[in-house]
Image (cartoon, rainbow, N blue to C red; front, side):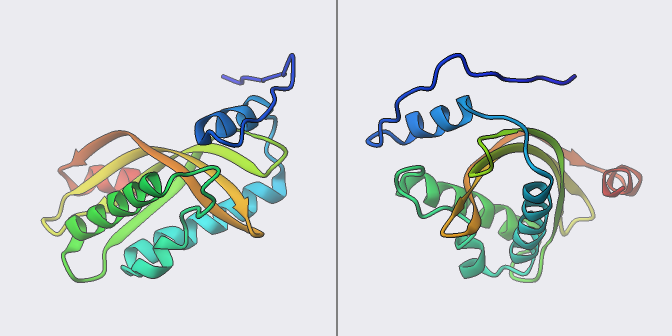
Length: 168
């Protein structure tokens, strides 16, 4: 299914409210450029690598510090959600975390883009979690950062065959 959005009016931005800013930018969304898609794919691959290597400082830098778009509380919540998943994955050793973008939902002339992913987090007991997530990313100081992420679903995979199917 393909969905297109065409704004009827351009809303005024209220910089005092983070959510209003994000929704107003997305309201003006359109197609994501090819260049942005490639840059975001590289950014996400690097994010998964930082998570897998438990590079907590590097992972923290993946989240937006722009307080007009993301509150400090939300930034902290996203960081600890990702860190908790990595700690669950392999304790103190390196984790095995990967993902792929499944759908580009739209963007606002590229300063902000939203998409969904399917992610695989292998657990030490031979099982894995298949996670579907929503991401909102933006360019902050010429670098792509995560403004929002939400887990949409999570399924524990029990068999090697199920895990290999997701890895494809």
